[in-house]
Structures are given as C-alpha cells and as structure tokens.
Image (cartoon, rainbow, N blue to C red):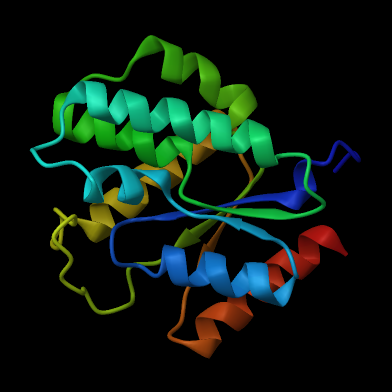
Length: 174
C-alpha cells in the first residue's frame, strides 16, 4: 500500500451487538490512538421521537465531518462507517442519498474490520435487528467489496476478539 496515510485509518463495522464500540475502544487503548465514537448513538439517544430519513442524513453528514476532522491522526479507529449508514438507509427507507453515495469513495478510504455476529445479542433500545445480523454483515461486506475497500472479518469472544483485531492491524501498520 502506498504511503498515503490510509493504512492508519480503520473503520470498525458490523451489525448491531457485535462489539464494535468495545473493539474500537480496546484498539484505541492498545495503540494509544484516537477512537472516534459512533455519532449515531449519541444523536439517537438524545432524540425524543422516532428517527426519520432527515435524521439519518444529519448523522451521515456529521460522520463525514468526524472522518475529515480525524483522518490525519497518526492512527485512528472509527466506531462505524459510511457503509453502515448506506445500508441503514437502504434497509429502512429503500433509498440512499446521492450525496452519500458520492462521498463514500473518498471519505470512506481506509481499512475495515467487520465484526462477526458471533457474540450473543444484547438488548439495547436503539437496536432493531436481532435476527438479521448475519444478513446485515453480508450486506456490509458486499458493499465494501463493491467500493474496493480492504476489509477483514474479526471474530472471537472477549480478549480473543481483541487479539484477532490486533493481529490484523499489526499486519497493516507494520
């Protein structure tokens, strides 16, 4: 990979309840790096109504801003990615904004770690798809491959999952 800084930008993706936030935090600690939390969670936790297409657009726009604000760090881990948002739009609203499609090739540049749905489902009021995790994981992988983004599946429970991710990251940055 050419030295464009892209090898230092990692997106942690996957279906709901697959440990993305935990893994992002653990990797940030391990590498003494920036871990950027999922903006969608913060946004939705403060919303006092059902979310709309416009809300998901606002989330996507802020996610792009967060990517741009943090991309130049020596190493950065993002809890979620634009591909998650694209699939969310498509699955819930059957429509993806053209501006998001246009933003993905540049703002989405980086290495992707796809969290396997091999962890037990944990209830959270923001989660909607307990029985579609395998399907959604496949959707994310298909979209990543379609976009030409390098991606790896992360599996295992607890420390094994973290070690699996560390091994992948070390292969990229070393």
